[in-house]
Image 1: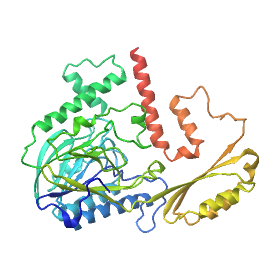
Image 2: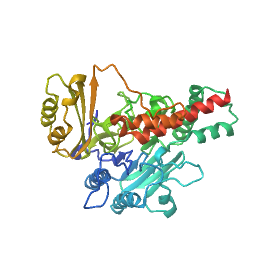
Image 3: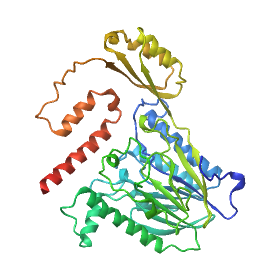
Image 4: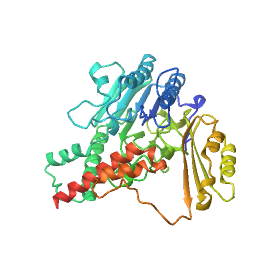
Amino acid sequence: MSGQPVRENDAQTNAIRVIHFADLHLGMENYGRTDAKSGLNQRVVDFLRSLDFLVETAIERAVALVIFAGDAFRNQKPNPTLQREFARAVRKLTRNGIKVLLLVGNHDLPNLDKQAHALAIYDALEIDGVFVARTPELMTIETKQGPVQVATLPHFSRSKLVANLKERDIEYKNRTLAELNDLMARTVEAFIEDLAARVDPEIPAILTAHASISTAAVGNEHVSILAGNELTITPSAVQRSEFDYIALGHIHKFQDLSRGAYPHLIYSGSIDRVDFGEEKEDKGFCLVDLARGATTYEFITTPARRFITIDVDCASEDPTAEVCAACEAQELSEAVVRVRVKVPAHLREQVRKDEILGALSGAHFIAYINIETIGEDVRTRNPHLTEAQTPVDALVEFIRTREDLRERSDELTEYGGKLVEELYRRGSKN
């Protein structure tokens, strides 16, 4: 799937074959139980299956370089088991003569700048064929098919960018959030301009960045972007003629932002689904044939776990039968399923969840069955919500009462806390 696909039998003779993927988020355990065979959470097994598919594809399709555009793990402190499984995949690539570049994403960054990031172990061990990018730099990687220039733009924390403004004696205090974001975006754009100026025009070049592009379609996973709490970069800042392909990470939805222009500006998206916000998105990675001024790519889908939402607006006097019929009409095997039912208030007691569960018996995992009563005017206040609570505590309690939000409770709480902290920070300045 792409505007300019490339197939095995029509690959350019002098092209260097590259795989671009991002946002693995290994360690996501939403909607999973322990897998008896491996001892891992089933969702971790799902993500590893997609990663294994990518590795096998790289070997079978004679790939010379794999570029990972950030966010290897769910958080910055992956457990040893997750580290081992990711390292196995990297090692299998390098043993087959495939070079690997690992870009540091926001989920890989520690809370404190002086702490090691989640990918630092590969730098410390100096593993042959593995390159880790934590700072903006231009490197030339010698692959089995020829040299490739890779310009790297890892994710920058706001504290890092503010420190950069301070170092350059740029006034940043008493700025609005929009003004501060603009200053930070200009800083990042200056990094890109500097990298582009150093590119050798005779050697194919890739820019890889873990960042938000202003024209990208974002999914539910990016609460901070939707809330205006994250800086974005314009496409023109990164889509420069010095590069032959822009390998982006950070947004989980595959999308080509090139708009017919060269070079290709691509979010590969994530290789498996994190939650229902990604239900309808294709999951996979990009197989790139890199050639100076003539790069093409193909989007390859992975065997990602299916997510299915069944929505039923009950109109009959037997809502249970209506919901069960809707469930049985779906192909649910190997899928994570949720059911959202709207039912008139006078029929609420006629909804029998045990029968609905029976109709869902073919599903891999049942996330939840949410029953929403309509036509009911009286709302009961949650007694656990009080004025004495902090905003974050109130948010946690609110999420607890909402089945449809529980799946993203950790993420919503994290971003809610950051927004509250930002508001307090701005308020204290005034």
